[in-house]
Image (cartoon, rainbow, N blue to C red; front, side, top):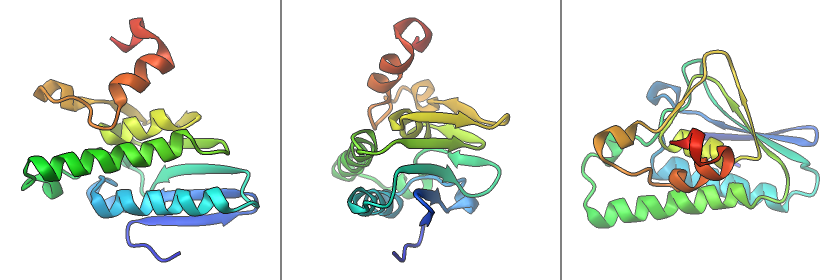
Length: 159
C-alpha cells in the first residue's frame, strides 16, 4: 500500500504502522489521518495479522499532535471535518479486533496522546512525554481524549 505519511508493513504476524513525518514531529494532518485509517481498514481484513504496533518515525516524537501549520487557515467547517476524521481514526483503532500497541518514542502530545490512549497497550521509551497542551490554550482535546483518559486511569489521576 503506497502512502506518503504512513508506512504500513508486516513482520510475520505483526503489522507495524509508522507515522512517517519526522520533519514535522509526525504531526497529524488530513492526509496522515486518512492514511492511518486506510491502513487499519486493510489490516482489519488481513487474517495473517495478529497484532499491530503503532509508532512514530525518528527519535523526537511518536506524534506531536495536530499539524498547527496545516490547521492555520481552518474555518469552522474545516475544523469540524478534521475533528470528525480524527474521531473516526481513533474509533477504528479502539474497536480494532486485534491488539494495538502504541510504541511511544518522544512526544505524544494532543492528538498523539489521544491516539496512544485509543490503543490497547502503551509502551513508552524513557524519553516519552505525554500531554494535552491544547487545554492550556483553552481548547478541548479534539479526538476524545477527555473521555479516554479518565476511563483509562480514573478521574483522580486524570485531573
